[in-house]
Image: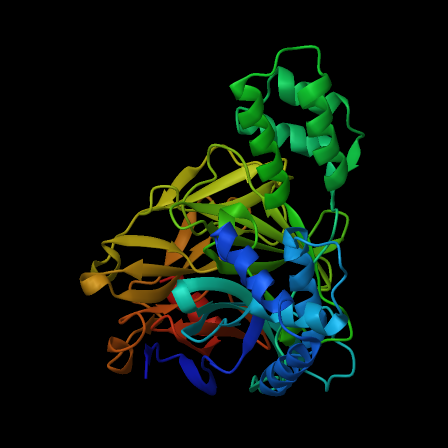
Length: 488
């Protein structure tokens, strides 16, 4: 059991990885000849053999996946251009071909960890003093690939916590086909990427103020051949990076007929192909009262980490957005839940060691980080960082932090920032709130406790946190005592 502060108490809620939760992913060998050979072998089967083999596949796997035939047909359509004959296969043969280009992926087989928590947009039909919540989790499976997944639950008037059980079937989030882009923002992002040149300007001049992905691809082809200039190698590189930028800004849909906890947002853009990591969700209130859920997260392509942004109004339609600017680097950016003096504010850690703050007029662009805190205590001498978005109180902004000490042990602590000028640290715990104990010395990643956010309910801080980068639980912390400790 973790060691926690005397004014905190542990919850008996525990979320552990479930290896039986799987999704069907496309499986397409890199060797093009192998793809053609697989298709050829299935196409050579007699129809009776096709039906018999398909029935075996459906018997073995249909109870594990909802609408498995729809998925098989989708995967068939992916490789259909490789068919070498004009003859239209039967539906059964299409399904069987699709099954050969499908693979089960147990997305949380290794870990279910690093949670953040926000109020649910639907607070109806609850007992007095209760709150419904949404918790994001980092789910990690084979190959250490991380996905974004969710749980819902409720906290009652006594701050007892119940987490809803996910449904039987896990389903990948649906990608919005042909998403739209704002030309002004797209242009600004290209400029930050140092891609503002004759070719990109020619492309942008041909697009409307709001354009679809298909319009971008058509225009790229058209300008490549029709622009009154000789095509260069730089044009090809610019075209590829413009397409990469568009693919990295995508949208997903979660149908209302399904539970939020059933869905998995699997890495799909080039920047995140090896992981969507450590989402820090926050309910943001704009100056006009409009509420939007945002989350910073780390996109990992196998070599480079890059901070990015999630945006949603209700968790049914989710946008994944690139962040730009010279300050967009490293891990651990956390957005304040409202503007400070008319500007968006963000905590960050550009140098992988200290805590910084940034301000901007445009949520997508961040330029100038300002150092606000360095490691000071033995348990954080290696590095510090935030553990989620700042939480507003009358006294100031509570920021959960993590410190890394001897033997790379991660602890969770807290600081207090000035309410009007959060660049000022006005309170800091000398000892951690939560420390890995004997149990946490063994696990997927030993000696680690970590969180990506908390919320206040009934004068307590409700803190979900992960142990050994594997399992998630909760702590309930007395808010008044915490504030008193911070001000000592």
